[in-house]
Length: 337
Image (cartoon, rainbow, N blue to C red; front, side):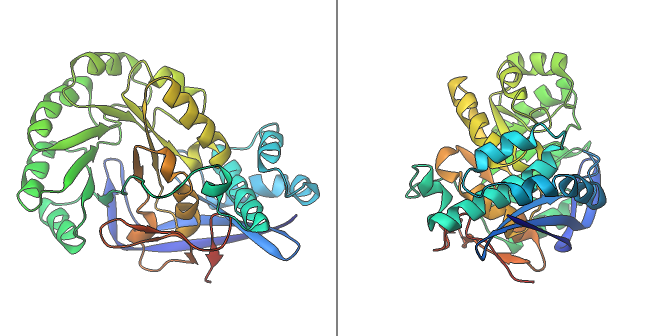
């Protein structure tokens, strides 16, 4: 296979805030793997929390160029296992794994969900994320995009007041994400109020390594709690089952579609709810996530919807959440620029 790398800076339509940072653009790396004139694409974004930069990602992927250019396009899972022996981060493995699967499906002329034996008649609707900001700005963002399910970023001393005000303007389903900003006491207290406001679940309220605090939350919280930062790799699923009601799998963190599918199966066996989320990716990463839709309870794949301009085409999310899958195979990705 031939390897090509394309770095981009994605401009967001609006400034986006979470409890620990705010940003107006997202740096991302697109990996292309080609065979017989067909190219598959994968993506991984930079992320300061996980200390990932585009230069570091590029160095990692370049370090396995000889392996990739001598590898077969016929077995993405075997390629992934080889990558696991090379000490790559999950982000680097993700860019390659997504490209390998997209290429594999395009060569087979079938979408990945079909190759995996799934159908797309029913699937969860993606949430639309409202970044943390002043309450007035958050209300305005919500009104700008009427949607059936919102994920609301929190992590302040006015979190219940924010959700109370947002609830005045919509009957949509709410999910909240504190991005590690609360402690156990805050989580338990906030959950009682948030439940009354129609919140469906809380995502990652405590710091990722606060397992003792999560044990307290697990026994006293009025709402289900979904792990995000606490569930990065396959090995984390089993521990999360003792402390959370579900997991949010990020392809970039875990290493791509190959490990994500194993994590889904393991989570199901442990009785956990399963969500897959995004990192404000382009339609390259979002189209890969969409291939997993029939296997999920919840999904957060609004990344490309938050961009000022997309760099790729693939799955399309229509008003109200309906997903239009492309006719081409794989993840159905085409680079536009």
